[in-house]
Image (tube, rainbow, N blue to C red; front, side, top):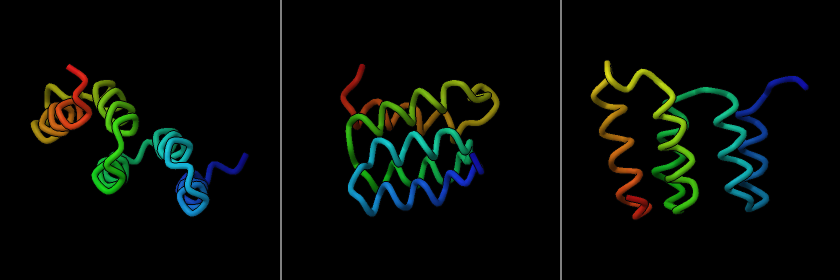
Length: 79
């Protein structure tokens, strides 16, 4: 394993498998890219994956993370 998760995400997206692409991004731990990819994908399962990941971060200290968690769950209608 080389740990090049962004490239794997790109290739999975090109192949049309957005769930696997999102899981690669989650492994990379790049929060900005995860939030961006989630907004672009507009898929219920991806919204839930991203919101669950963001909950593991220090969302008490960062208001932007809290806003993203709420909006992702709302968009996924998972409340």
